[in-house]
Image: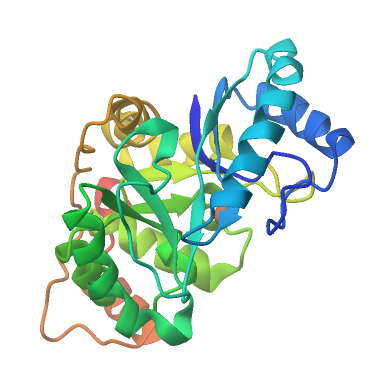
Length: 267
Ligand SMILES: [Fe+2]
């Protein structure tokens, strides 16, 4: 499998991922055990980030041989942090040398950032991927707006599995129900926050079917490496419904009592 978002490089300035090579090697072991053979290294970064990018490239080059011992290929990437003033130009670091860039928003500045960054990114020839929207936004409608401005969505496997709490899991499933997910990545930072791709793929296969799992875990990562836009997953929710409550608890109750739930429908 290909992991498109991971903080596995050791001791990158400005990043909060692996602190040293010892931890990185443990993460290689865990990645291999999880069936991952390609990792796009995405330490946190700002734009412009010339010195940091040089340092990051040097660290990755010095780490590649060790990764290869575990059958893992390391590719270049960056997770751009907002809300720093962000003007994307042709020097931006695309994921694996493609025209896709990964962007992490900060909640308090999101509204003013989203449209401006989308315009800037597209005019520079890049496609923005929103990192883990399930941990940033409040409603699938909000994420749908972001999607309509040209972003695709990368959800985190641990969020889908409930590792960040039931609320985050519930919202992740809302996004999947509405087709607002194009990639699932680890966003692994350490051995205590590592890889959940295999478990998540199994979960999505059971809940959403083989086609959706295949798009998220095979097709779209491969398409990204080929610099192609991702496929859309099947939309399973029919709750574009004026009567649907906005409150997540009431919405769940509504679904329960109106037989709105996909998993019950399938059983
Ligand atoms: Fe990240």
